[in-house]
Image 1 (tube, rainbow, N blue to C red):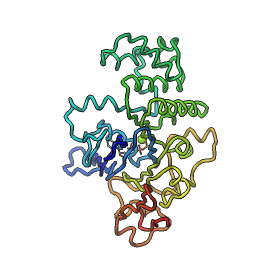
Image 2 (image 1 turned 180 degrees about the vertical axis):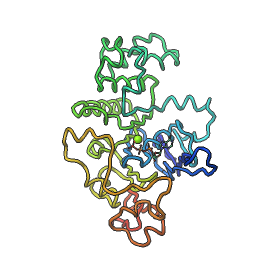
Image 3 (image 1 turned 135 degrees about the vertical axis):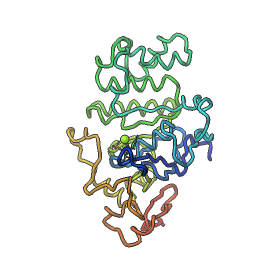
Image 4 (image 1 turned 60 degrees about the vertical axis):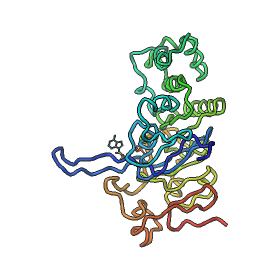
Amino acid sequence: MSIEELVKVENLRKYFPFKKRIFSKKVRYIKAVDGVSLSIKKGETLALVGETGSGKTTTGRTILRLYEPTGGKIYFGGQDITKMPKKKFQKIRMQMQMIYQDPYSSLNPRMSILNIIAEPLRELMVKNIEDRVLELLESVGLRREHMYKYPDEISGGQQQRVAIARALAVNPKFIVLDEPTSALDVSVQAQILNLLENLQKEKNFTYLFISHDLSVVRYISHRVAIMYLGKIMEIGMVEQIFEKSQHPYTRILLESIPVPDPKDRKRKKLRLPGEIPSPLNPPSGCPFHTRCPYAKDICSQKEPGYVEVESGHLVKCHFAEMIE
Ligand SMILES: Nc1ncnc2c1ncn2[C@@H]1O[C@H](COP(=O)(O)OP(=O)(O)OP(=O)(O)O)[C@@H](O)[C@H]1O
Ligand SMILES: [Mg+2]
């Protein structure tokens, strides 16, 4: 593993048990994440894109061990953290934070902004807590007057700024951003994206940026991974994905980028025509073959491996071709 890589996962799997009836003995599994391998360099933003239910959130949560992985390996700063005992992991876990889509539900409504941000600081036995809270508020574009307010007294954009300030309190290195702007008004989205970008430049943060909005992804990320039914179908640099994509699924996603329409942009889920197969019973062969306009016999019979069509650009398709 290169020292440049902060996060690396190999063949990561997360299966959720599923019982059709409470008393049924037969347990089946929802393969939410099914063999994901990726790495993220220090200071880099990797976007994770895919339709609703493709396993994006589960991937983010499993990397942070908010879900224990079913299989595979997770490395952080070169250390294997997959099965690291809780106590030892705690210190590393501090360096990893997650920001959610809906800021209001991630903030305790009964606590003042001061106490929300002070909570992790108290655990760290930080002195002069108020000064540090003010510093954190200012770093996300808020002011002293916000300290004494409650979550429902500030706007959605300000709530997301508070959630970011709280995540920054523990000096993280890696942040999973799970659709951090999808619940916000369009005018506010750009401000939060700018804030995240500036913070990254200042502090060299590493981001896993989960999103269904490809126009936002193009703007904010360095590399992009396209996910379908728990697997990565294509991964590469932003230009490789947007200009030279080879996977039919990526191409369909790109064609479906909505024309900027303020009402439409607030959609929270990405849906394309055609049924997404159930992750309880995924198709044989290539998971995308049931919806792929180019599918041939082999696609339902054999699961394709990854073809590295260009340096760092991997495509999981039988018909991917190397770029000369
Ligand atoms: N805690 C859970 N228990 C059981 N099944 C789950 C759980 N979390 C997610 N799943 C299932 O795993 C699959 C992947 O879900 P996940 O939330 O990771 O998708 P997503 O790509 O984040 O979707 P969205 O765009 O809607 O947020 C789905 O079929 C979902 O129903
Ligand atoms: Mg999700």
